[in-house]
Length: 130
Ligand SMILES: [Zn+2]
Image (cartoon, rainbow, N blue to C red; front, side):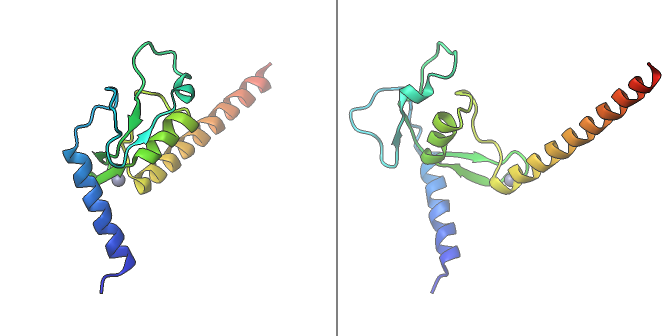
């Protein structure tokens, strides 16, 4: 018998394959939404000062992680959250898997704190001179 983890991995692999096959155009109006698609809410997408089109719906998108190069899935639901709730840029898309994203966020956070500490030292040194 397969474990839940194995079954989830199989389901994920199938969803990735399906996403790779479907070259659905999310900007073209359709009478019936494709299977697994999530309708977009244009009211929530108005935050961008873009004159381009907004997607009408979201479908699962397959991508390779920028860092570990593994096949990943950016689900329709995650896209809706990113564009409509997190107000992500309309032209942005997922580039890293979750573990690599965590590593990247930690790296950025560390770099920021080092830079801030350096600025604080510099400010202090300048303050002592005056
Ligand atoms: Zn990765």
